[in-house]
Image (cartoon, rainbow over all chains, first blue to last red; front, top):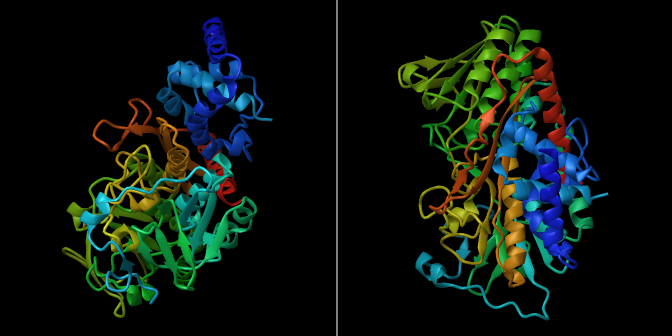
Length: 100
Length: 425
């Protein structure tokens, strides 16, 4: 599962190509902005909701997938994570990982 | 002059049929596009901020009549005495610092042909795209006898501010042993779980301070949001204090006589010490005056752009729209606003409109250390309405431990800090 996720996210980066990073980030923003209602603008959270800014993209994506499958128990994320494809999860994770 | 009746609110294009034929004029590449946003709550303030965050080459003007915004989310904690009104009030300084021209005024006329908004103070604003985020208005006499004057005696407290404090004062003034009534309207209304959170937090105040008192929820419905979670909390935290009467058990309030203190359901007359009457609602008057609700009370929009189905060039977000599977919540308004802002930028910059996923989480407090929530992810459906994504809609579990409920209460606090910072910090 972890290896598969790594290959997937690598593929996303490769397919974005040189100069495609800005476009990829723009594509992810329409999804990532919604996450910020709980996790804070740019993933910088106040209080107990986890901050996403600067987190490791692969770990973040894996956790989202584990929430979606039920392998990890949470509250909101066991429901919310089911709303996204694996590619969308990787794109969102890459977006927040790039926030500092 | 301030009330936007059909008579005094000037709509230059006059007929809805004319509006539908309009197309927003081309934006010339050399000009800075202009967006006017009317209404500075969760929807409007979020659209203004996210327009600027997405493209700072766009001029954004936010028209809001009040200098400060009091959030409805967390206002039940003020009613219950667990939080101050100052702690849920926000100014627009940070919105201004983000480059938004914030104008404290009221729109008195909209010309959708010339794309012009006239303000009460005389200023005239032109726009390429207009966003209306007027929230709800209360339908006076939707419950017989419940008008604005009656709300001074029996507060609704469904638009946060002075009404919130009025309800709080009435609870404080009540003698121990008094009856409190919370009257809940039929769907659709702002914040589906809000009345039950309010009942819970008032019950907490009564239990601690006026333990011989009782609270009855008079409901125009048969079921309600997060019902098993609220009923579990009422049984465990407030036994003998909270009673819920659905419509089929004479729960629907049909009339009030505010001066006599009488609240009447279909079969019973009650004389509570404190009556909190939440009346039926519809879209804010500016949307109604423009005919954007097509006579239905709420406005239908395109779920990718939040552009009115009636008037091209005019977008709507928040409680004033028909939200499909989303609830009328501050969270939903904020999520819609982010999608709307990006769509407006795409339209102004001749880029394709993106495919969004919208989110909602509504936390409720049954006590300050007892929280639970309903979650959901949403997308534009084939029918043109917003639909939920299968598997994403659910609530906190029944039977959770006190520790888990306390943690969810802390999540609620964290959410409130983050979403209010999104708009006002």
